[in-house]
Length: 464
Ligand code: ARG
Image (cartoon, rainbow, N blue to C red; front, side, top):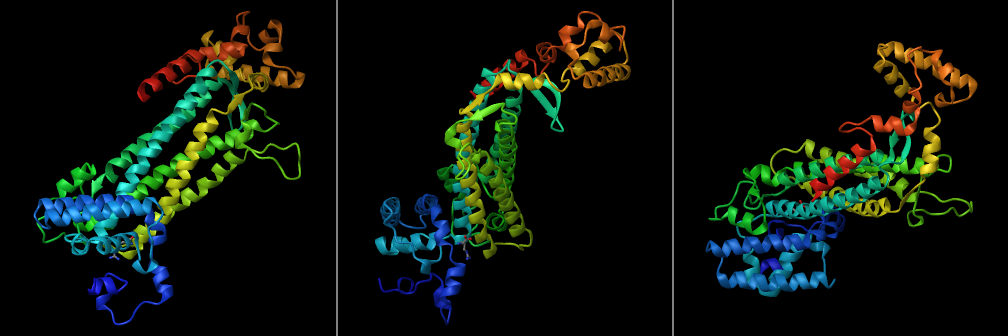
């Protein structure tokens, strides 16, 4: 080929009198990170070409040539044989140039009625749709692993904390289900973001639409989009769908980070409620006794970078006038890193959840300290007719006596307990036990073992 396009390195260079410097070339190029969009770029191009042929804008022969060329390019990329050129700026121009090398004029007709502006917006949406589907699958796996853990420990009792102080006895199953709920809402948010991701920008062209008789709904259908973006200016410029995804991702990581913090504390020898499998921990190069919870710590740390990416994208978008601006090229690295970080983290956590071993004796011993059943004693007095505030005060006196004596409420004799309220009878010892305490919280959302089992069944049914 001896035409202008193939001689010049840039698709747009005919208008310019001097080439850009190497530094500017490197500064403006995106090919070394946006080449991960190659497969979706080809998918989008093929759908566009099919529509062009169907509408008679290009010939059937040209479409066949484009298909042939793209099949070869796909193979070259998969085999790692495709040569990505910085001179060709981005993934789109690299692929288009190679297509033209392979099939000639048909390749040059592909870009009819299209711009890189609607092309890149389409690629990102296709890529993100796939990423969201993967993430939804991983959230589901993690939730199932946690449900299994909760089921094994519906009856295991440990202290529940507020302000990191022993508050009331709870079941470990109930504790784990709190995370199942968090990750469930995360999945809802991802699924909701997917609805707005899954709309087709292609056809918006550079910004105003195109003069060719295109069929956008046809392309949307081919690519599995639920709808087309309804305004061409908006279609090429806004990245709110990516920001929404990053916000949802930041919340997933926030939940992961909370869980990580709990894993770190709970496996500390000072607490010793759980252990995690060795494959998620490392030793110390100097202290032979150490088993460090590296994976939860790193996940807690990586939450920072995902939160940072959300702020990057919000800041990237906030000052942009309509329509497309090159600023938007900066959406990719934060987005890709968010997808990578979240995907790897969820994959590891789903596995790690199955590597958690629970130490019920340590949990129980801790629940027996700290007057965890004091509220139960107050509730007992209320049920005998005492107003709650008076009951609270009577139990506070009892706790103070226990603190002075260095014993638990259940260690006091009936006579000693009756000194705080004459309403106390021999049945009081039922409510002072850990089992009695958790079993009594027997309503939807409560910690009673049978409620935990019911909640597990409910969620398993939803996950079917
Ligand atoms: N590489 C660009 C991006 O990621 C593609 C769109 C370029 N369009 C343009 N008119 N420069 O946003």
